[in-house]
Image (cartoon, rainbow, N blue to C red; front, side, top):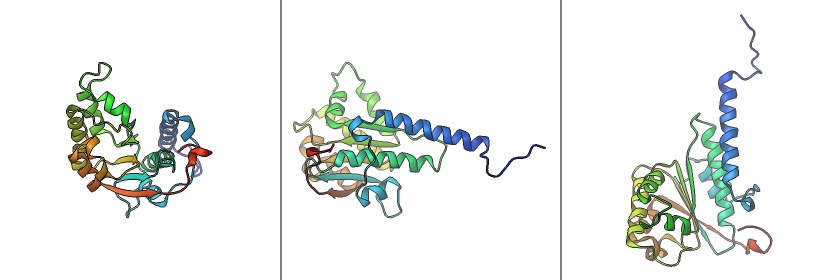
Amino acid sequence: MPFVSDDEPDDRESVLRERIEDATSRHYDRTPVIYRKPISIHTAAAAWATQDASAPASLFLTGAIGVGKTHTAWEATRRWLAAHMAHTSRIPSIETWRSTALFDALRHDNRDWDAKALTGQLQRADLLFIDDLAAARVSPTGWTQERLYEIFDERYINGRPVLITCDVLPGQISHIVGDRVASRLGEMCGITLLEGADRRTGAAA
């Protein structure tokens, strides 16, 4: 009978470690270069990332332009991924979108995307991260707002988390995402205000 040292990981541990490293590496590759550097983040964002018992399932990061909302969010997604991979062998799916790109992809006349298929994909993802939700400034079409409602309502009723960055509060974006989406976000998200100087004077924000 072969001797197996307790100090040597078994095959399952090695496979799991490889899966974690692969998932982390692929997420790192998808992260914009300026947001790859690890940073300290707000305690509420850190608690959300590890799903501390006191943390909400979803997080809405708000604050003035340049305080570091996007950098905080990318760091939080890395920690969220690591926390989930530490407890399961299944690699969670993370969808990351800038709002302007998402609204464009959800347009019914966009030939590069199947809006209905994309809607289903975003409904099912383990985590949906939308950056700069108020960036569009111009209201998307009724069709796009309906797709947004389908996405957020499905995630709401199934308890699937979202991570949002925005320079205004949920109640101030109804003209962009529609009243129903704004209401859902206000109910499902813990709201964290980031404060400070404009980080863009010397770093990414």
